[in-house]
Amino acid sequence: MITLGIEGTAHTLGVGVVDSERKVLSNVIDMYRPPQGGLHPREAANHHAEVVAGDIEKAVSDAGISLKDVDLVAFSMGPGLGPCLRVAGTAARALALSLDVPIIGVNHCISHIEIGNAMTGCTDPCLLYASGGNTQVIAYSDSRYRIFGETQDVGIGNMLDKLGRDLGLGFYAGPTIEKLALDGDKLLDLPYSVKGMDIAFSGILTAAMAYKEKGCRLEDICFSVQETAFSMLTEVTERAMAHVGKSEVLLGGGVAQNGRLREMVGEMAKERGGRMFVPDRQFCRDNGAMIAWLGNLMYSSGVRMDVGDTEVRQRFRTDEVSVTWRK
Ligand code: ATP
Ligand code: FE2
Image (cartoon, rainbow, N blue to C red; front, side, top):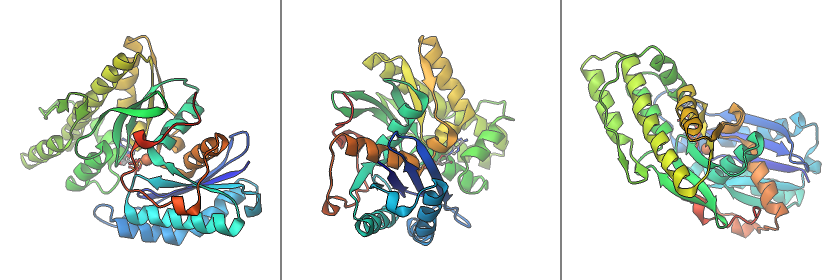
């Protein structure tokens, strides 16, 4: 069964193709970068609407198949930005109807988990899902992916991007912050905000900006933000692992591309006698292959949807989905 997946929860329009043996045949990633300022949902949606048809064609051609070989269309039903989700949803419905094949709407967060599981070979991990819009510690238990801890305000990536904007580093600032942090050596005091199993990032942002006003070096600010925010993530992840008795930890989401985060979580896992797993970069960030992958898993486990069931859901939670494909 050939599955084509369309991702469109936020800045990235992605189209991926997965075959019957669940091999990724193609993964076209088309990210919208605003000319200035932050991400405006409608502008990102306009970008997605402009590129989606071409990206579908490219994904099909990269996969070495033709459109009529597609047996199933999957798309990211949520969570995400309404206008962006609607573009991906509309494209998926139009494609499924025109090809007369079934359609499956998937939970974007769970697709990060499943592609990570599949690509790294871990078996039963605690997932630290750290992206722009989402920051959650998740583990499987009793037919659900359950959230053990999460951000109470913004996702860590959004915090980094906002900081980058305020520091004049441009949009999608995670990689730039990571580079600057390498030359930082002074640990500035920032609010370490862990409440129970939950975390919050907005205090770090405010305090970091105050350091900028005081003339502190950007390198030290970026270094301190990373050290503080990533320690918070590592602490909560470690507690979740201890609580559920799992020794594997899987990283997912765009921020999982960060070397320092990997180092900290990796060390923590090792100290616990466990192991960290990180999928290839193209599968950490938002992409269509992970959507196709989960669509394929769900369909194979018997899930069916009518077009009428595929309305997008901006606040679609990870723990709402009954995990029918895992025993
Ligand atoms: P989601 O819809 O799952 O919330 P997203 O829309 O944020 O995902 P992703 O591609 O998963 O998309 O993640 C993008 C985020 O990852 C951005 O906030 C970006 O700054 C951050 N990021 C990317 N590379 C790095 C890095 N090397 N270090 C830190 N953050 C990074
Ligand atoms: Fe994502």
